[in-house]
Amino acid sequence: MMKKFLLFLLLYLFCWGVVVHAEEVKVFASNYPLSFFAGKISGKPGIVIFPGIEGDPAFWKPTTADIIKMQQSDIILLNGAAYEKWHTSAALPKRKVVDTSKVFKGQYIVMEEAVDHAHGPGGAHSHSGTAFTTWIDFNQAAFQAKAIKDAMVKRNIAAKELLNRNFKSLFEELRDLDTAIHQMVQGQAQIPLVASHPVYQYFARRYGLNIKAVLWEPDVFPDKHKWTHLEKILKKHPAKWMIWEGKPLARSVAKLKEMGIESIVFDPCGNRPEQGDFLSVMKQNIEHLRLIYRQKKGKL
Image (cartoon, rainbow, N blue to C red):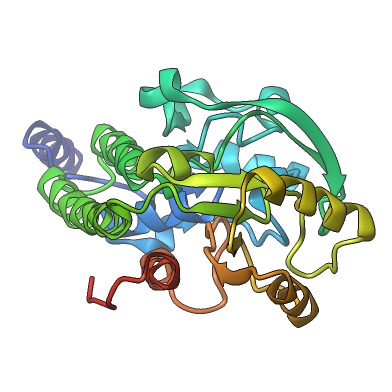
């Protein structure tokens, strides 16, 4: 009799859309922005698995143990745009995989030049093919967040109303970041800038910025050839500002200043920050940009 009652109860709960889980659902994310979005939307950051990755997750190579964690997860969140170089050789259940940038696949940026170099624990890697730092176009980030929300609704991660409400809150925060940059650069978008790395393609396109990239590392003093290359760029692109993806060496900043070039940091935040979270890092990035566009500081 008790078994029949329990079966009836489960059927009743299912029919009325109530979430029932024998154990906690797990969501695997391939980078920090996706893990942050998933935590915010679900309201349960603890269900999101983002492996401890040293360096840039775009050049991470998962171990067998990492692949097993993915396979055992209920949802596998990928950035897409050729971000996960390992994806094609990993045996992942297709029904669990969510390519969060698929909806704007037709708007991917393809880099014309292939450049190989080495930095960090990932060793040598290539900046070629499809640009992958999609989320620093905050409009695209909102689409990626929606893909996560839709996947969670489909898999009953939490009540649909809760997921929609949390997504709306995140969407509004991303929209505020997007609006702040548009307003800041209005009428000044053609100011020439140099970026220390080719990771700002979508950012530049969304906000109409005039950026040329070099291949410098924040923690490495550029060699003679890199300085010569920069001087060549400056002849046609007279930038007075360099954007770094991480805090640069004081020595690099000083030499740039001798050349009349100031430095700011705009951290793409592909990995978990030492302090704060995705939104606080992006707000700090915007405050740094105000130094270039000479806007009064404001609140987001």
